[in-house]
Length: 274
Image 1 (cartoon, rainbow, N blue to C red):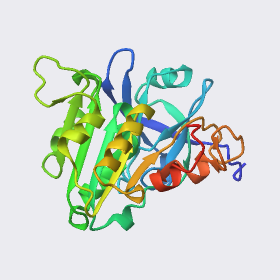
Image 2: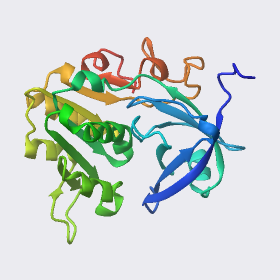
Image 3: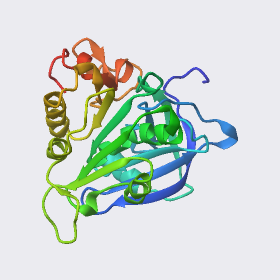
Image 4: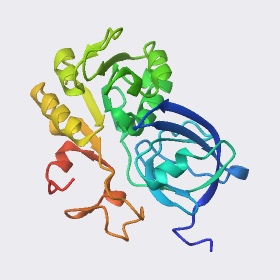
């Protein structure tokens, strides 16, 4: 059935990294495809992952389009399918179909200063942008990354973020004070206020818990960022990926088709159902 839009490609798990342990465990999976039977994607797009016998889930692609050897997915254990994925091992086969949705207009941002703001597992959807602009460093202005976790043990991509400091300004935070932590203590939106990134010739991209996004956008607006300068993602309730099931409907939009990437100029006019 070559034209079956619901038929996934078989992908083999080539590498697994535990990012965060505990009740909100996060693992990063690198998936490869036999005989080059993969697919191209753009920054911000998603894919549907199948754990056979358990179900499917829509997950952001967390690797740059410039990386051709594998697709990366960072997944928090929150339910039946994510738990089943976390129980898999290197060499196991999963189903992958995609890519789905629109993307961050990275090409249009050339010459701009970029402010990338993530919280929790929300760093994964914007990580492809980070990887892409760093790989093409001369094409972009200043790069500033804000990222926060509940505690220092909840910070994902820790080693990658430390390496990133050679190419970008990195501001890490934890929600409350803890022994040995020398960076910002407080929520990510408060760190935005403390550091005051400039809106001049800038684009801000944010992804994380909805309450974080709400206050990040408020604080960016207070700093002078225009609606058209702020981008975020919606990834709620997506089941089919192709605008058929209606689960991700927000107002007039099917998020899996029109989104998941929105500028605040577009998103603020949708019904506040997300």
